[in-house]
Length: 360
Ligand SMILES: *Cc1c(COP(=O)(O)O)cnc(C)c1O
Image (cartoon, rainbow, N blue to C red; front, side):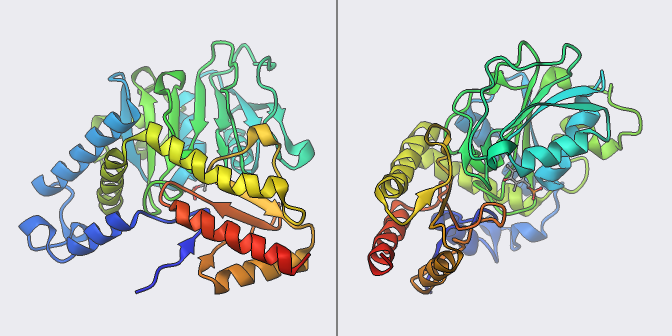
C-alpha cells in the first residue's frame, strides 16, 4: 500500500487513523455482524452512533444549548436554497460576494426575494476580503450572508462583518473544524463535510433555536424545513448513515489531537511553511492579499501556464496529487486541511525549491 499526499480541495484527505478504524470495522461493526452501511438507521446501534457524533461535535465546537446540530443532505449547495426558504420572512437578505460559492448562494436567494450585494471583491478576482466594518445593511434584511473561507480563491475572513444587529449566516465548508469558532455570533453556521471533515454527502448545520419554526416561505417542501429535521433529530428520513459514522470518528480524532485550538496552531504552522516559501520565491507567487490568506487553501502561480502545468505533473510524479488550481485562478492550489500532515507540506515546499532551481 502506498498513499499519496493529496492536496485536493474536496473531497479531500482524511486522517489515516480514521480510515484504518473504518476498515477494521467494515465486515463486523462491534460484534453486530454487519457494517454500518448495512444497518437500519432506526437501530439501537445506529442511534448510539448518531448520538455520540452529535455529543462529540457539540463538545469540540462548544455549541450552546440553544442551537441545534443538524446532519443534512444535498450538499452545501442545497443550503443556498434552504436558508432563504427558512429565514427570508421579509424577503430581503444581504450578501457579501467573496467568490463563486458566495455568488451561487446569492443567485439562489434571488429566487425567493430581494438579495442585495452589499460588498464584493470581484473587482480583483476575489483576491481579498472587502472591508465589512460599515456596510449598507438593508434595514429590512432578514440576515447577512457570508462565505467565510473561500475555497477557490484562498481568502478567509479574519474578523466577521459588522451586520449592524442583523443575523449572520455563514458557510464554513472549507474551514470547518480547522480552528475554534464562536457559534453565538451566528444565526446559522454550516458546512459541507467533504472539505475538512468527512466523506462527501453531508452538511452539518448549526441553527439557533428561534430560527427553527413552521413560519417558512410558502411552498417550502417538508424536507427543507429546519423544523422537520430538528424535530426528528436528523432522522426524518434515512440520513447519510455512513457519513455520520465517519464524521463521528473524525470528531474523536480531533478531540484526541487536543481540540480546535490545537488544530489551529498546527494549521498555522503548516500554512506558514508554505507562505514563507512563497514570500521569498522568485518563481512562485501567492495570489491573495497577505492579511486575508486562508490557512486551508493556498493558491499560487508562476505566471507561465506551461510552467504551471510542468510543476503539477512533476509534483504528481513525486506523489503529490491534485495541485492544479481552479480554472478561475489558474496555476496551483494546495489545500492543506486538518488531515494533511506537516510532512506533506514540507515535501511540497522541498519540491517547489528544487523546481525553482531547475527552472530559474
Ligand atoms: C465545496 C463548497 C461548496 C459546495 O459544496 P457542495 O457540497 O458540493 O454543494 C459550498 N461552499 C464552499 C465554501 C465550498 O468549498
